[in-house]
Image (tube, rainbow, N blue to C red; front, side, top):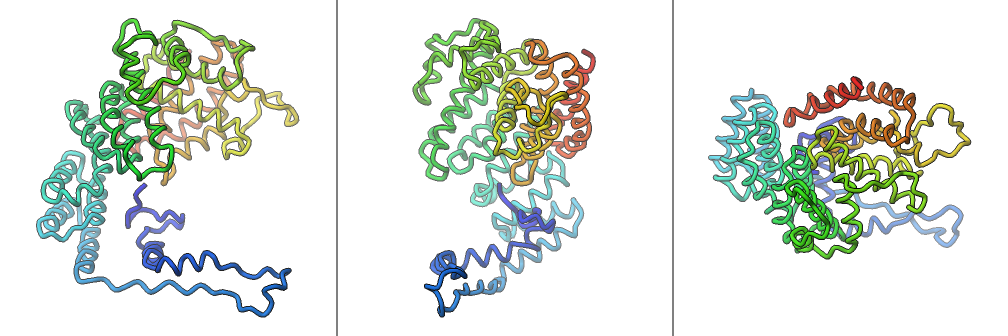
Length: 447
């Protein structure tokens, strides 16, 4: 994620980045590469090793002093100080004046627009972004994924769905440079049920992602798997009688890579649509396979019984299965706080069924990690809490939970949801999140 000068410092000091680690980071970036390499190779002699006796210990050279501001940089810093002290109307005027005078660079344009997003309102803010794009397309391009993600969020919040295709196409054009913002918008579009548009957008982005050298190894393969999954879900959304052997589906999916496991694709479709069932107690399936199949059955249940859009149900399935996988991993931070069900002694191993039922402490940690400054996966956090009451009911219906345990879990986890409610009020860019969570829990409470 991009860290701005006025964002909280990633070191956790609570200060603004520019008042804390910015100067140090800039100095480190200017330090010659050879000096940094030498410093990293330097090792203090070990006390028990006489082979270094008599040799002086290495002291890395101090980083050079930050260079003084150029006149242009000094003018920009003065502009920012004036901007910070101004009210919203004056800040808008200062931004437009700086844009007209050619004083902005990418950093200051991004910082001002980030601040004005909270102060000027979505309509005026959107106009300012368009003014930047028209007047300085070079500056706009530097942070375009961020601007587009926010514009998509605003369009969804305002119900301006007619704006989404153009915004999504523009975002797809940036996917070769930045996937973080792309995935945030993917979650937004899926959450609000725009599967057809999302499938088209990911298809447009795929050639750029595949050709890019800016991502870690395997990112292109992960993206290909994602776009195949979304393409399959978009097919289910528009098809009356879907089938894994449908030539139209196979043609759509295989443009992003071969379908290595056609039986798995058929299994997913059958489970999501309710055409087949896989009882939990089938002993011939490995545990991971049973959990995954349970997830697809739950996804279909969310759509048919709870009226959730298929794209949002997909986010819920992935979020809950990820949470369960982390609870089962003894090395994860989630697993360290897993609370045992009533009647389970510490010496008694937790079963797979035990791990299916969320507990307050580990769910709290899982959601908090999604909301951290460096993650900010708000949609993932929200859809997890929205889906939990339906998941508990689903487990009960499958005979995997007693009525008493379901009631206890609903009561205990409901307290967590109540405590988290102010969080959604702080994210007005998607006003549907809070009410959707509240409605899901109210429905569960009504039985």
